[in-house]
Amino acid sequence: MFEFFASLFGYLLSFLYGIVNNYGFAIILFTLIIKLLLLPLSIKQQRTMKKSAKMQEKMKVIQFKYKNDPEKMNQEIMNLYKTEKMSPFSGCLTAIIQMLLLLSIFYLVRSPITYMEKVPTDDINRYITQLQEEGREVSKVYPEIDLIREYNWLKEKNPEDEKVQKLNLQMNFLGLDLSKIPQQNITDYTVYIIPILYILSSFISIRMTTAMQQKQSEKKETVIDGETGKEVKEENEMDAVMQTNKMMSWMMPIMSISIAFVAPLGLALYWLINNILMILERLILDKVIKQEDEEE
Image (cartoon, rainbow, N blue to C red; front, side, top):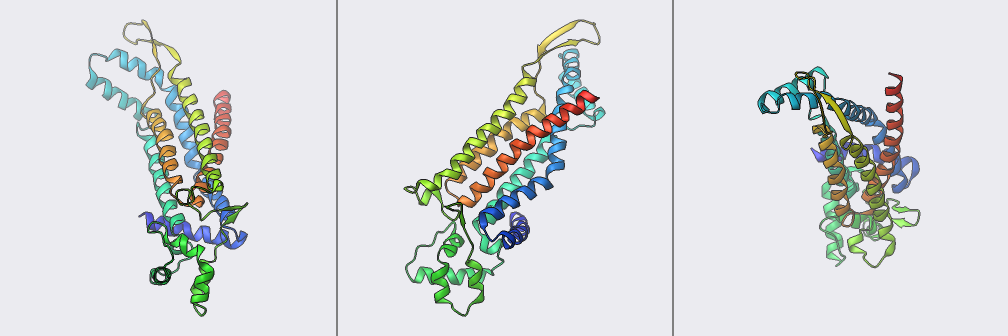
């Protein structure tokens, strides 16, 4: 499944590369397009979080009323979600899509010759064998990145092979070689620039997410028990949607950071640009949705 989406994304990335003739700028445009395509989902997710926060008062009434009957309490909470046309697992769809994108784009950036340039596997294996026979080092994890690096040598070795030309990808981006892997170039300080910027943007994104959630969870509300009419003040707890979003806000960056140091810089660049766009998107959508609430 990941190979299918990697191949699909490869057509888009190849098209963009043909326009700008630079792998880095192509990835930036690619990230922007993917973000725009997912914008309706982001808007829905943001609205779901806002609506979920508003449901807390009703949930508190149910929790207090049926505190001695967990089964009935769960049933009433599910009925509330049904009435409000929401699902307690709404955040799962976003999590699944994020994971699908993460792995599919990892496949794409790891093997750009296969998924972006559509060079047949037999030819790729032949080029790898040629390098190995000459004693040149070829990575077991990222062999296609090494083929791109060895383009000039392979071109001389295969002068009549037109497919070799597809290995000639412009990986230099603002003085940074996007084919480099931090783990393999420890002494080269330039390989840490993009991963470090990515880490900083991740913590900004996490900070924003947790701040929004804490604002809701720490807010105390006055809840009226529908049966006794008494006021009950309790901490406003996050529901299943907020819990899911909180978990994903930490899990995705941690996974990405661990991969960023063992993957080509092209992948870290995608994550960095995606984070920047996500921060801007969150700020804009939060303001727009807040304005919609005030108008209502």
